[in-house]
Length: 280
Image (cartoon, rainbow, N blue to C red):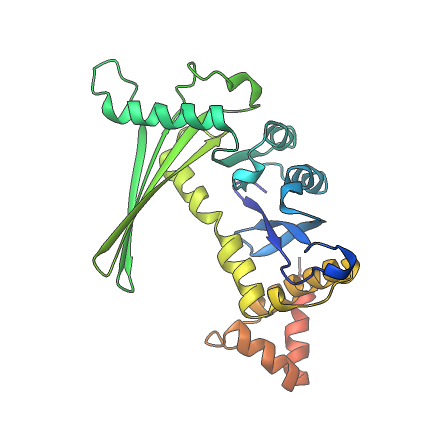
């Protein structure tokens, strides 16, 4: 799995609640291989806050050796970082205020690094990219550093090697917006590589969660039985992979492929044929 990215993120099955039974909506934590567009595993929890315990349990079921595991701020936990490293992988973890001391120190470091122009200042590794299209210009600047001797919690984060700041500026119809995001990583301070990893993490939102809602109507499903919700979530993801692999007409959207499967048995068998492994 060398140089592969495994994105882990949670998604609430919004209408799986049952008020009469005091049952909350189910929250599904998924591991997603960005390069291949496939799910590696999933684990259901009762609440979003349980991601902290669900993610290590999910990692126990996966072989992530040689990969980079990316997780949003909910999964930025010392035990999770240690489990990733113990599993032979690297990590890139989003850092927010749920780790208040570390977050404050990292923010202060980058503010100081950008302002300090003395000869003794440690230079930041940086990389900048720009995308333009559909009336939007987006510029991303990645800054990272492995100068961590000052960090009070460094010894508690296994494998920690680099801190990262990603600055995003968007110009849409003359209106400018800007934001900063912070990360910690076990990778070396290669700004271009880390920036690419941070961006590719969002494929789990754009290529999986969004499609499950827009094409399969997952958020509108009123199935409430816990086993049924979990099993159908898995089947939707399997169906999505099969539909994406079927490329006889590249112009056909996933939504149209799904409809055609219901109309045309021959096409259904064509889609199902994608299950067969490729010849060795």
